[in-house]
Image (cartoon, rainbow, N blue to C red; front, side, top):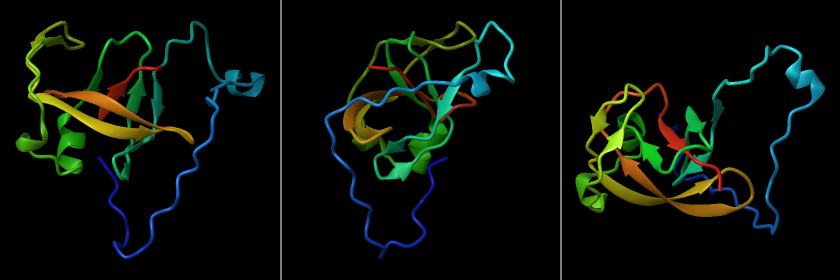
Length: 134
């Protein structure tokens, strides 16, 4: 669920704009408590729109960014905010899901902000969204 700001009158922090791509690496210490094969999901808290969003899964094998109902409602989006999108998706149970639409939102995981097209679906997921790596 999106975290809402504590107080609306506080100034928003400025985002740093730098010309580098952050690299995610793990040390030997990080690896100490894991057992191969390393197939756990990478779950992050990026900034989507104006909110820090928890439980976003990074999946480099996906062809689409997906937004689930908790995030859609938490960002207070409405049907009128969605662009048409009618291609069905397959969920983790291998069942077809018809999207509600698509929305383009800014996402920030480091110093850079990118605009991403999220396909909005109305189905259960333990994640609020799934994003791919560029």
